[in-house]
Every structure is written in C-alpha cells, then in structure tokens.
Amino acid sequence: MTEEKKVTRKKIRSTTVMNQYMADYFLDLDRCARTGERKVAWCTSVGPAELLHSFGFAVHYPENHGAMLGASRMATDLIPYANAIGYSPDICSYLTADIGSYLSNNTPLTKAYGIEKIPKPDLLVFDTNQCRDVQDWMSWYAKELKVPIYGIYAPKYPNEITNNLVQSMAKQTEDLIEPLEEISGEKFDIDKFREKLKLSRECTELWGKVLRTAAAKPSPMTFFDGTIQMGPAVVLRGTQQAVDYYNLLLSELEERIANGEGAVENEMHRLYWDGMPVWGRLRAHSELFANLNSCVLASTYCNSWIFSAFDENDPFYSMARAYAEIFIVRAEETKEKYIKEMIDLYQIDGIIYHDSKTCPANSNCRYGMHKRLETETGIPSLVINGDLNDLRLISDEQTKTNVEAFIEQLEEN
Ligand code: SF4
Image (tube, rainbow, N blue to C red; front, side):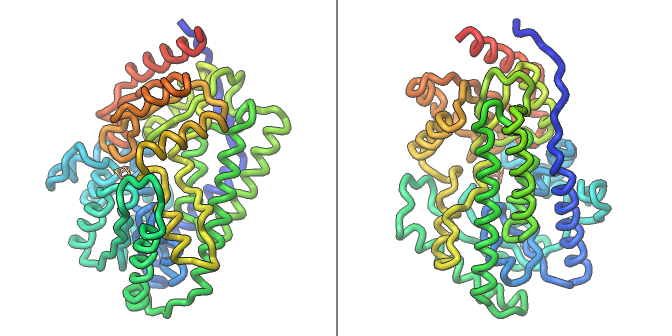
C-alpha cells in the first residue's frame, strides 16, 4: 500500500491580484446590467467575445457561472430545478446548474461579490464548436428573458481545418455585425476589433507560457492551480488587465523554477489530466494526488484557451480559425496526436481520464482512446468516473482507491 503523508497546498501569491481583477469584472458586469451603462452580452466560453468587446458589450460567460456553481458546491442542489422543467439529469450539468440557479434565484455571485442576480443580458451569442448543449442552454434563456440570440455553427470532428471550413465560420461571424450594431447602438469599428483580438492573443499566449512552465521538473504548478488561474483567460481576454496578470503570474512561476520549488513536495510521478475538472472536488483531488507524491501538472482542459491563430491583420478569418481548431471539437486522430505531444512535452508518467457523466463532448475515453494511446506510448492510464458539477455522480471512496492503486502501479513500474 502506498504510504500516505499530509502535505500543505502551496499558494500562488499572484492570486490576490487575480481575485481583485475578477471582482472588478463581476462588479462592472452587475453595474452595467442594473444601470444600462453598457449593454450586456452572454457568450459561450469559446465564442466571439473579442467582437462583442469591440462594440463595448460587458460580456458574461454562463459556463464560467456554471463552474462557480460547481466550485461552490451549490450545483448539486440546484440541478433538480432544471430537471423539474424537463432537462434531463444526464445533460450538461453546467446547463442544469445554471438554469437551476436562475429558477431558484440563487447565485454564488451573491456571497462572493454581493451581487443579487445573474446580470441580465441584452443579447445571447453561442458557438457550437464545443457541444450542442450551449445552443439549447442559450435558447432557453432567449425565450425566458425575451432577448435576441445569434449562433455560429461549427462542423463537428474535423481532422483538418480547411479553408472552406474557416471561411464559413468567418462569414457567420461577420454576419453578426449588423445585429450587434443595432443592439449596441455603436457602429462597427474594425480598429477596435483588431485591438481586442491583439490583446486576446497576447493574453492567451501568455497563458500558454504559464501552462508550459509545468514542463520543468519539479513542476511549479498543478492542473488544479490551472483551473483557478485560467479565470482571466476565460472572462478577461481582450483586456490589458489579463495581459498584465499573466505577466505577473509567469514571473512568479519562473521564480519557483529558478529556486527548484515544485508545486508538490517531492514530486515523483508526473500526471496528465484529460477531460473536465470535478469543480466541487478541486481541493480534495489536489490533496489526494499531492499526498501520493504525484503532480497532476497539465491538461487538455486548461490548454483550451490558447488562441495563437488570432491575427489582427486578418481578424475575422483568424478568429474563425482559432475557434474552429479547439481540441474538444476535433477528430479522435487529431486528439490522440495532440495528447502524444503533451506526453513528450511534460514528460508524463501516467494519464488520468475523467469520464464526466454529463459532458460526453469532453470525455475522451469513451471510444477506446485511452487504450489505444496506452498501446502506442506505453504510458498507463486510469479512468475516473464522475462529473464536472453533479456530486451525486461521484464516489469519493472509489476515486481514492483507484488513484492509490494506479500510483502503486506506477511505482512498481
Ligand atoms: S462542453 Fe461539456 S461542460 Fe461545456 S457546455 Fe458542453 S456539455 Fe457542458
């Protein structure tokens, strides 16, 4: 049996600054919704946020709210409200938790920032690049709140991102200009759009550098740190604040590398996480692995907000390309190639696949990928059954037993 020890979690100092930026963001959003100072748009997390920012919209991301519901462990109690109006417990638990939050008028924003209600939108925009659930989710709000809704429809599972594919998505994005002008009352300004895109690329490239610090031995950060630190890349990309924050965070992590300071004391096993985090168990999972001298240090999830393809000289086309080529929407072959690259980059000893019950789109072990990769690379894997938000779908004991057995197997190897 692997011997257990108790470790303390190493805090990232810069987080205090991030927390202030996040508070400013939510308070601004709330003020805009209450006073009409600026129009509010809701956008899916990998939707055309930069275009919305160029029109001056304050942008809210329902998936971010869904993750907050999970991390605050409010989701499990709120999901039944959405089930009661016909949404299955088997569909996205961001969706059901968020709609449940709306129906019960109960949001983590109240405790965190004193915000009474989710900021009401003037417009809803989605991109189906990640899954169909986002379309259904936004469509429900469009009816309920009687607000206009626009969508970008992405092709599913491409291996290759062809010119035709990108052009089709770029055209759909350009078609948003007219309604956005009407709703915002602002004329489209391509220079503002270019500026937002440039800032967004800078932010997400810095975020990529932050994540790549985990290639150092020992790794200065964990995947669990990453799920918190990715906040600005999700909700503040396109702003100078996000760029400033990742510069600050990067220097702190580089300092840790220079001092040989690992996020996990005595790092012996380097692990990769595929799939969604379990938001309500971030701390428990972080401690579980650290206590076993194991650092879960990289993931496909946190890497999903790196948009190096953004090019302000060709804004619509490059944005369409960046949002078309995200991991979640790609064919198995492309995904496998990507994970193999990650194994090499981060010198991975084992892979954890989270089979998240309500998110098939981001559970990559359902069609044998983990077994194929094991055969090809010799890197062992473990599948954890659970969910991103619904804690009724998780067995903590089972997870602990399976993880311990997996680490023992790595030790024997
Ligand atoms: S990708 Fe998964 S978690 Fe995200 S919105 Fe779609 S179903 Fe929900």
